[in-house]
Image 1 (tube, rainbow over the protein chains, first blue to last red):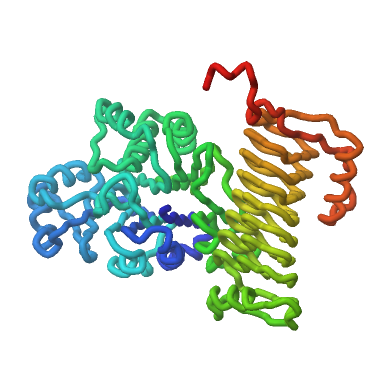
Image 2 (cartoon, each protein chain N blue to C red):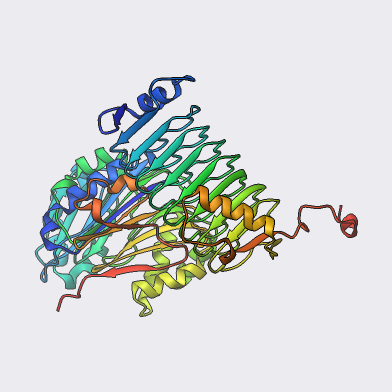
Length: 302
Length: 228
């Protein structure tokens, strides 16, 4: 199974409540997958600070003095905010790539969950209620977000095997289903220079979209290609810095319900996930069509 | 009339109350409020009672229904009225995938659209959809009638046995061994009866086309003997 939720806000008045709304939606989907849970939150962009969200199996050891050690190594000021097993590293956008490379050498056990201007990803093994509690997701605001609760089928139950998967700046993907051509596709993407953290099929889908977008496609066009190039069962919800996309395979056996009002676009694996959203009684509710790309985008910041 | 509020009453209590009904029970009309997408609402009812569900439901609502009249005043998740034996189930909104799957009898009316695999493996149920139906509907359908006032998706009636399919709108594609068939007076009569039972007043049976099995896939054909 697996449970997916997503929320793309149109009404800025709801932005402070994004984390709380998304957390409630995700906890409702707990019985679709109790193995691990994760959430991606797209917050307000900061022109002078990019963000690396990282995780460590030894947060006490790895995050202590990280601000100092990383700052000294790259020769620029960094900010580190620790949240349980994760930390958000704020760094000058120009130093983002360098900081990531340096981090790999000075803290080899630290894993990068996401990097970009607005995205933060938190994911761990365990139940959604525990995962959102550990990282205080309810207190987070933002413009859009995606959550996933996993019933593992294709790879091990580990932090890195949890969704969302992020394979490019401010990009993330969650998946309900299973891909059958992910090994071939992974080999092709590796040849093109992509790197992979896991044996997971969903990570391949995320990397595929990242590679397609790197060739100049927008998210909608990349998803169009996925219908042809990915073999298997999937319902994907995908986030970019300003966009939010949904795609189901042609067979469409993995469930999906969407709701739209003047205030938001919402996705749930089941209608149950949506029932506490404001104005749901009068929302337009529909099941996304098979092999059809759905794609929303905030107006791009100037 | 018992009113069961699923915001405070556990689902098992509702279903147990419905299962405890015996022939001649005093309670003949139940109202269920705040279903909020719950799964398995009013499953396995086997007495001729009326159940009004005031809102949208999740998976498998009204499954295995026998004799009861169950109305969902909202939309239904996957598998509504799955394996229905008899009685009537009405969905006022839309229905998700495999509505009426494997149903053996009774009438399922969907006043909105139905999604993929509507009536898959139906075995005698009658299904009337006011809107459209999705792909792979009536896959391996064996008996009963599927009536669609709107359009049908891809691969309608794939590997069909002896169910009848009536579609008023466009059919995106027919599945293997499903063909359009002549609409004879007997079929018009069956269709008129189903439209009447489903409360459809302003549509004439002559507006539909009939589809059924070419009977080439499931019958032994002597020319294929070498293949065995």
